[in-house]
Image (cartoon, rainbow, N blue to C red; front, side, top):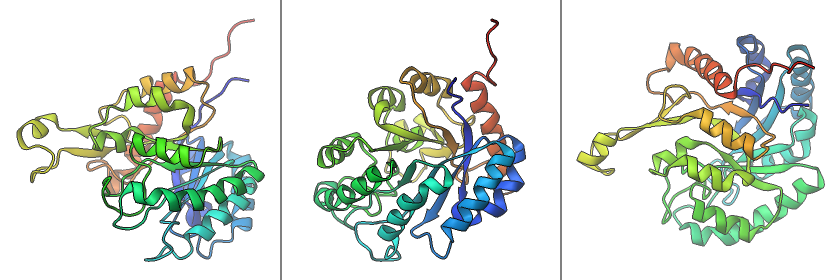
Length: 295
């Protein structure tokens, strides 16, 4: 059976039953369901039941469920984030998903080095809980405005941090929810990075970036002019055929889901126009639809 490498998009977990029927007809083949800081009042059992019914009707999959908050602190709106991780790990199978994604968290205002012991404690336990349920954990590589020295939300935005994380919790079921955009914002070349780290990439976000090298060369990265923009795939600097080639050469078994709502041009009324363009672009980079060989 050929690995289709489905192309889809992100949808808020609490809105999935309302939103998916409105957009699935555009050709999305998978969905990632996301929650901000907490799963809140969402009935995961009922939502999973209704989403699975839609999946059967429209032939899509749920590739990940995720919660994006700071599970290491439990403060500033993150009081339920750790419990939400546990909840999603326990309920992922009801959605047909085997990946729970999110931020690592970090000790607010502290360095990545200082956050590793707490990460080891929290995700050591979560990785065991996930392994018992056949679930993998994938960390998004977004810096959320943080640096090595200080920040909030996430430590998993730098390859040196990845080495420290995976040494601290040497579990086969923890890896990355990777995208080129967040590395390009740090002026890291994403292609050789993906080639090196592809075996730890469990899920891919479809988000790109445009780097204004003329601005970098004239004003640097700390001047008044923006030097990089998050982009929807097909409008940024990355050749996604290269990304898909690397993924397939490594026998990647996951999906690519577009993370919209960031493009500075294809936004507002043009949001879904940009996302559908990205969907069709990524399908072309995949090689189009599967065509069987003659027998």
